[in-house]
Length: 397
Image 1: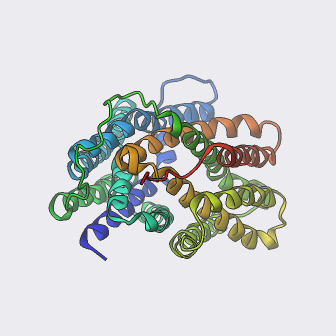
Image 2 (image 1 turned 120 degrees about the vertical axis):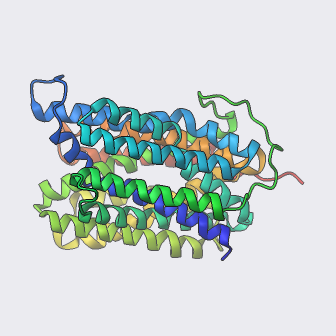
């Protein structure tokens, strides 16, 4: 494996870990702060402010990711990646100060900075596709998906076990560790990463902050948004459902998430790699998306003794859908540039991630199984869009 590939995989793993580290502490940060009163119910008031501040990051990414991706097609991946990582370091550093000062404003500014420089994953993914032959595109994206699974597994573990540093609180110390991981990633990029874009400036796009995809990419964006909304509802709701429906305790819920992370990592790193030799991304998607939707319904009704086999079935089809969806839209990188494609995809999936909790909140009013039905509907809608309108780009002879 080349040094560049190792560096890129490390950047992606560290980036996901730094996000995962925050999962156990972010709710605690807002619970411990004195927040302006929007609702007379303290719990609702905390949830409102938590949603508003955390939502600033994906909103910022919606505007910035296409710009940064297209910029990396024009000037190269390396320094756009460095700027993105600098933004992450600055954002986390401001968050440390904000937690210590109990300043909601500083926390909000930190999320805005991190959101508007959120090109890490998109540009790193474009770099991987620069050095991967077209026939190995799905394999490369499967490895990225496996690293997401590992990072989201390792990050919360570090966050939950982090110790006090520099005499700071547990929450601030966790943010310091996340800052350190991002700083290491930035330094590795500066000193060890070599430019992968061999066609700098060949593909040029109008640089704009409001993302407007090319018309032939719109169906791919729509399918991606629907898929991410469905998966986002599931990830937001699953822990709560395990508590309320199955009566699991915190340790048992953590076991379920560890199993999920490991199985998705195995699916993306092994099954996707093997299957890519025999089937094109679109063909896999047309099978995996409906089976993913059915697996969600199965999880809604399965008895507790069969939970883990059902979860494994879910992870298999979700993992295949995740990698092959990205691979299908990435085929257009040959025409528009991988940075542009990765940035545009990251932009709209970030927006979809902000919509998922809203849909979950509305659907959960009608019953504990209703969110699973909503997931089924949006994923089947994604399958319909892929079936009717999404095709792999073929380079003209």
